[in-house]
Length: 316
Image (tube, rainbow, N blue to C red):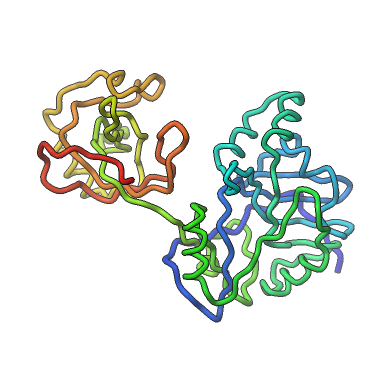
């Protein structure tokens, strides 16, 4: 039965997990880019995870059909590659900030994007949302048009641990496990998809904090040591329990105010934070650092051990 192909659907989301092997799953690389829905009917449209129309920002993606079909809706990831051949989130994110066609065309030549297709949700007027994962993939492979700026996400059966080790060696983000036979659930975070990120944990100085209207800690400002002294590494706001926040407030009582400039911090970040002299160290898990030294996806993992003269240094 024919049905209209939606211009956009909120994407299905994964829960967090650890590396595992399974005959009931297949495994894919986790692409460090921008989640994207591709709609094609009278023309091709691109929408980000939030539903923002980003069609005009990636002309190389919409230049030709991605599937041999009258109409379709694809789920996938927009990536830009770094010189070493792995996805660079900062490069693809920079494409979202462009505001004129000349700069967009220049960026498409300098940092060309690739759409990594991993799911087919509608095809030729038919909804595939309730179709098992393997059948959706088979149709995607059958209708896929090779070449251009689109690739299929490669699959690995059973051996999730080996794939995770392989992507970690290449400094890629991680993997996603997908349960065989599972439907597609738009906008839902489902255990049928499990994401396993390659993260690291370091110890950082706590150099500031911000409070919510109720007086509870909203986020912590972090720094690690460089040849030029302590330098701001970002804020962490997730992973902290209410009890840990209360404990930190007690530890921070009586802290002396510090000038954020000493940590290399400029406004507007400085205005929203109470900056202090460093006396507490904390464990923080994160995905990677940006080219400017900021932490991506930081998660608070607890106060570090005894506080003393020992300094916090980033792991090498």
